[in-house]
Length: 217
Ligand code: SF4
Image (cartoon, rainbow, N blue to C red; front, side):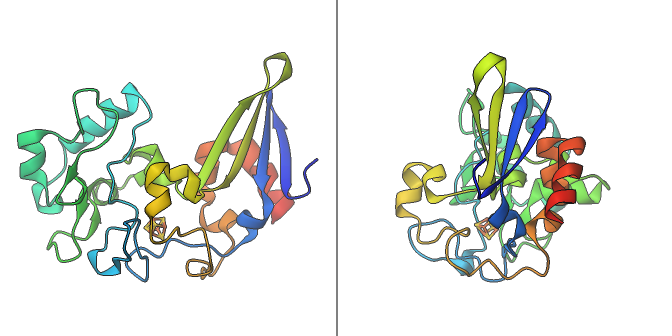
């Protein structure tokens, strides 16, 4: 067993969890110090990691996002008119959300009267639902990253770790800041295993998450 990883077996999958990160006090500091993911620090833009279109996890996710976008209240969705006119996807393949005004079409600017931040997130909260059920998976999973590797006898190894600069691809090389590096975002009041409990459980399932929390708690 790798010393830095907690392993939990479940139904043919070996889950490996980055102990140090899950016990760390990392927290999303969007709107309170996040420098964004552009080549230059741009805290004032309030874009966080939404400067790029969100890459979607297949056709089902694209269908869900497209359907929910159509339900958003224009008062809560700054780029509603642009979405009606040009859609919410980057192109006809619907593999990513469209960029409008330098960021994801769903991102409301800091001074938007209907609320800053992700219009899908706001829409979910307005509806009394979880943003996990409304937002593209990459958006609510970040900064948790899962690598799946096939193993012997039809099993697999799933490594759950923090996002790294390399996970951003070419953009990662020019980003002024990566929020899982350094100490700027390690200012939470709880360990990640607690603060991202809902997200982690959605990723790994209840049984594995309960066991993980028992061991790391
Ligand atoms: S996840 Fe990181 S980059 Fe994205 S908004 Fe939060 S602190 Fe900023």
